[in-house]
Amino acid sequence: MAEFKEAPVDATAGQKLLTWIDNRFPLTKLYKEHMGEYYAPKNFNFWYVFGSLALVVLVIQIVTGIFLVMHYKPDANLAFASVEYIMRDVPWGWLIRYMHSTGASAFFIVVYLHMFRGLLYGSYRKPRELVWIFGCAIFLCLMAEAFFGYLLPWGQMSYWGAQVIVNLFAAVPFVGPDLALLIRGDYVVSDATLNRFFSFHVIAIPLVLLGLVVAHIIALHEVGSNNPDGIEIKAKKDAQGRPLDGIPFHPYYTVHDIYALSVFLMVFSAVVFFAPEFGGYFLEYNNFIPADPLKTPAHIAPVWYFTPYYSMLRATTDLMVNVLVVLIALAAILAVLRGGFGAKGKLAVIVGALVAAGLLKAFDAKFWGVVVMGGAVIIMFFLPWLDRSLVKSIRYRPNWHKYIYGAFVLVFMVLGYLGIQPPSPTGELISQIGTLFYFGFFLLMPWWSRLGEFKPVPERVTFAAH
Figure 1: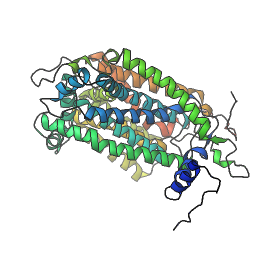
Figure 2: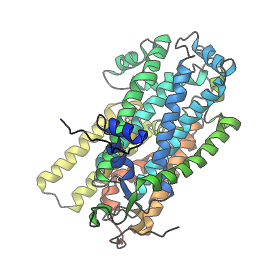
Figure 3: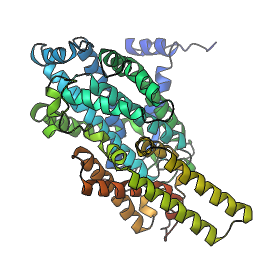
Figure 4: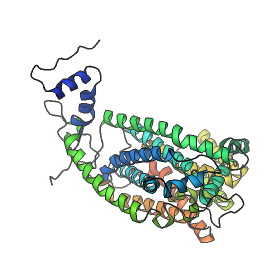
């Protein structure tokens, strides 16, 4: 049993209360470990605010979600009307609803920027592999949460978007139709589907999401934060065991994050009050029309944050599958001609290529589209082992690496734009090229990340006081 501490005789009432709590709950210990005595690198820059902003948006979503659930009816006959009731009759209901819908898009914006920062500075490299994996799991969970929540307004785009996405699961060989039926709870998207999605959106996914966020933060604070130089600050400490290049998270970075939060809330409020639909990107115009199973919208597209992956799905046609078969064949031929394998190794490469090509042709292109869409997210989990660069940070990599990262961002944004647009031959071709580049960026990373002339990494972080 832990020994109880006694408050000093001249202690104030607040100090006595804190001592009483500390004897029963490690409040001061948690504060010191995660705030006051958690030493973060002193050279954090603008890119390091998005993790804190993501946490703030998560709180906004939970709080606004609680108030929305008080008035929402998860019933196919009442759902759309209950949303209209919230918007028109509930005091400040319109504000809560717009905060929640804008918060969904804001969440993805800050998470995409947070992940891109990790990509730039190698925050997924040893010893932070688990931090990255938890982060990718949060992203996957966030996508599921957004998908389930998207159906709840029961508008035209909600209904038909869910119909399209759930039907994709029917493309899975052997178990597809039963899997789609299990997800829908009916043969079409109906009241049963709405109730299932409501349960997942309000209870199941948020619980998992909160657990992953806690695990992500604990794992981060166990190994310490990365920095723009990619240098481990724990390597050099003073006599008291404090990192020479570290400063306490509080008050230095709490002030830093509060400033960033103030700017973020100004932009967030401007969108909520003046452009909550954001030109149809945050709230589609078709979603202001009640769901009608007998009337299909002219063009069905997911919300903007899903569109890059939707583009990859649409890009996976029979032609694309044939191109992949040709690429596999060329890769196998080059591997055999280059040598470095024994006779058994060459045979294994040839057999592997034949099996891969056979599988590609054995199943429908629609199924491979689902695989490509899912694989585009899953492949990010393996980034710590795909990147073989000699240094972590983009600062000390060859300059042409920056152009590759820039092209990756550009391709991702182009895929996102094409996913919103109606299908066209030109758009399909660009999406196919973009999809090949996206996967090439990751799959060829063990090769290209080692190429070029790397700059010397300093022993201490580079920092200029300001």
